[in-house]
Image (tube, rainbow, N blue to C red):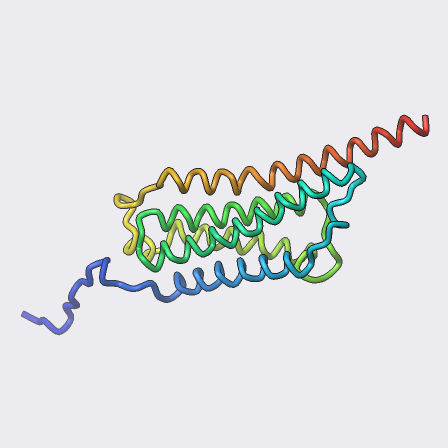
Length: 193
């Protein structure tokens, strides 16, 4: 009997996050850090002014700040869940990608992007493509399946609330912005009529 070719099986709990999965966690952390830092550095109340008054400006700015900090918090929570091999890690990773994808898609649909930099059309499209690629990776990766078997994965109720609020927030902001633009157009139409 030849025992040289037999490799011992490593129990999944003893395996560490490595390779592409560790790179994914690095990308999540770096992306969240860049999002939070650039949002703070570029913060201006003038960006929220669409002619609806001061209360509207402060309300939307506050919601946006809480949303950006929520994305940063979800990224940290996701990284820690993967490193500690929690049963909700894959759900959090996929949810983070869906939230980032949705945010970028709404930026794209809103048409409010710059000519260059992080908010440019090319960067938004890259973020959408990379989000899809990482989502497919989390779905099909053998390492993810080995470390987090589908039978052991769980979704905690607090995770549903966190993810639900972070999905709802950009949709709410998009619709509020759309209503603000529509009301301005409506007023302009009737004033000139």
